[in-house]
Length: 500
Ligand SMILES: Cc1cc2nc3c(=O)[nH]c(=O)nc-3n(C[C@H](O)[C@H](O)[C@H](O)COP(=O)(O)OP(=O)(O)OC[C@H]3O[C@@H](n4cnc5c(N)ncnc54)[C@H](O)[C@@H]3O)c2cc1C
Image (cartoon, rainbow, N blue to C red):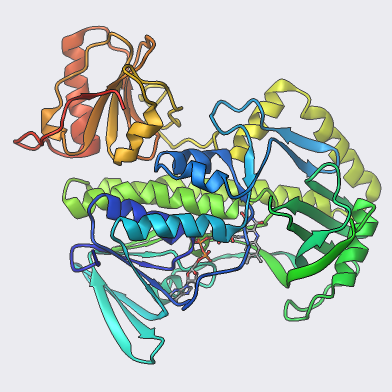
C-alpha cells in the first residue's frame, strides 16, 4: 500500500515516522516512508520509554513486546538524592522502560510493514515542494538514480537536521545549552546497586543507566574540558568524570559506542505549513535529561496520525489538522523547559548553591503533591490538551484505561484506531449508526456520571453529565459531528456496542 496522490509521504523511519506509518496503514491510508539509511539502525540513542508512551503502544497491541526488550525502573533518580517514584502512577505501566532505541524501532517497523506501509530505505530526500493540491519530494536512491513521489500530505519526521524543515524555510530558533557532552555505551565490571545514577559536582555532570541487557549508557560532561563535537572520545576521560562526580567508574570497559555531542534547545514556530507537517526531532530538540526526546516524538505521531487519516478519508475538518500544532507545540515547549531545568541545575558552578537546590528538590519530592506532579510530568501522563472555556472539565485530558462490561479494556478497544463513545455501567448510549466507520460504542463495568467521547489517541474529545437522555443524545450527536465529521447516510457492518 504505497502513498499515491491520496495518501501520505513520511520522510524518516525513526520512531516518530514508524509509529505514524503504522497508524496510517492500519487506517487503510496509503503511506510511504522514505529513509536515507540503507541498513537497520544499530544506534542505541534514546533509552527510556515512559508510561504514557507505553500506554500508546498498548493501544496498538505492541507494549508487551517492547517491554520484553528492556528493564523496568520505578524509581528514577533526577539529580543526586532527588528521585521520582513511579510505582504509584495511575496506569498499568508504573515504571519507565530502559531499552535501546533500536528495539523500539524494530517493533514499530515490523508493525508498519505488516499493516502494509511501504518503507523505502536508501532513499535520501533532497527537495520538497507543495501546491494547493499535493506535496512532492525528490529523492536520490542508493543506486544514484533520482525520483519523485507525490501525496496529499507530507510529514517531515527526519530528525534534528530535517531536510523537510530546511526546504520549507521553517526556522529552528534556539541555542546550545551544553557543549562537548560525552556518551559511552559500555559494560560494567562493578555495576552500582542503584542502577540509575545522576549527579553533578565542580568536575561536571555524569549519568549512568542500564539498557537491561548488560549494557549501560554513560553520559559525562567535563566542566573543565570543552572541545569541538568532532573530537574523539577516550574512555579514560569518561571514567575520570564518573569517578569525580559519582565516586566510581564502576569498572567500565568494552565500549560499543563512544560519541561527543552538543546539546541544543530548539523548536519550530509552526508544526504545519500547508500540506506539510513536522514531527519529532524535526520540530523540537532539547536536553537528554529526563529522557523525553523519543517519547515526545512518539506522542507527536500519535496525535497527528488519526487526524491525517481522517483528512485522507474525507471526514476531518481543516481545523482538526490545525489542532496538531495547537496541541503539540505547547507540549514541546514544556519538555524543553522541563529537561533544560535539570541541566541548568547541574551546570551551576558553586557546589554550595547546587547542593542547596538539589537538597530542596530532594526534600520536596517527599511531599505527596510535588511527588505526584513530578511523576506525572516525567511519565507524560500529565499531558493534556487545551479545551474551550465552556468545556466539560474532562475535555482535553488523558482517558485512563478502564475495564469494559463483558470483558476487555478500553485500551484494547482503542486498537481499532477509532473513537470510543463510552458510557457508565447501565447508562444509555445514543444511536450513532451514521458514524459506525469511525466510532465504537462501549460501556464501563462501573457506574460513571459522564458519557465520554474518547479520541483515537486516548484523550477525551467531549464529555457530558446531562441527566436527561434526550438532551444528552442531542449533545452527543453535535459532538460527534464536530469531532468525527458528518454522519454517513449508511451504517457499516459491525457497528454497535462493544465490550472489547
Ligand atoms: C547521541 C544521542 C543520544 C540520545 N539519547 C537520548 C536519550 O537518552 N533519551 C531520549 O529520549 N532521547 C535521546 N536522544 C534523542 C532521540 O534519539 C530522538 O529524540 C529520537 O530519535 C527522535 O526520533 P525521530 O523519529 O523524531 O528522529 P530520528 O530518530 O532522528 O529519525 C529520523 C530519521 O530520518 C532519516 N532522515 C534524515 N534525513 C533524511 C533525508 N534527507 N531523507 C530520508 N531520510 C532522512 C534518518 O536517517 C533517521 O532514520 C538521543 C539522540 C542522540 C543523537
